[in-house]
Image (cartoon, rainbow, N blue to C red; front, side, top):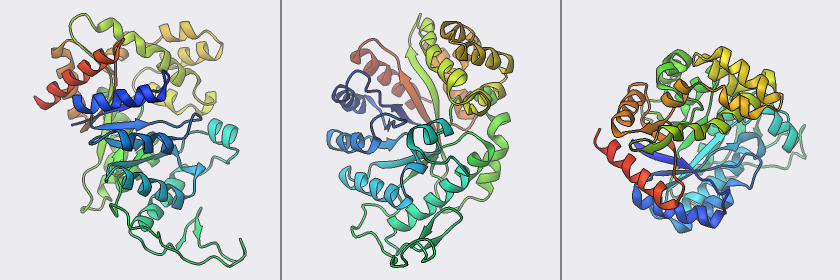
Length: 348
């Protein structure tokens, strides 16, 4: 299993990059660079390309609506060049509150947009002249939509790779099926081993049945917080604010994808309570309403025996790569946790 983590630069970007350099030596394989409505991801990815040697640098996640597919491809090819072939293009749809509220772009047909973007990206990386007529993207633009002067072009530079890995952040059945069919990796949210098959099993099977047999198996990233050792269990509570934010307040009440997944994991009543409390401004109470059982099952926090059991449960649920948050009050402690996890994973 590869080990990945999300770049957190709340304490400063240069400091976060230095930590990635140290984590790389401790066994980290992939770093996700977030975007949301913060600084853009590619700038940070380019910086990390210069500071690291081995780790895969992945956008985690760039919204597909905010860039043309050709620009997505150009960006990934550029970072792949800077990093000597260590880029992974992570894309997703984000949500209507961010797309329409921050970017002023209509949020519609997310699955179709992502599928077409992936097809176009791969054309660009193969240095084909891009000619594409889809439901949402037309390249070159026809005369009735523009000047009519556009002509098919191909990427000037020769990419390091003609097939850069693409990861999709997907939650709904249609998007998960599409991901399993054509993407290289899947980044789900609120993945719990015990409920995964009931939530996503059918969609994954549907997509894999259509998958090109020449493409490598889908890499599935999941895991949770990591704190390995005796007496670590109270650290599970550190996940409460983020879970409450996503389950309770991420998106409109009727369009909160994370809340829906939490419900499908078997916590329907709790999801309702968390959302009501969070939207009412009672965030502490929303955090307290998150079940202890969920915090345990959705984490890798506990003694070595507990963490090993959770790793096997994830593996049995189809997870073949880890996405984790390394807990520790200092850089040194987080590095030690990465080393501990690396050792447990390698011993499986």
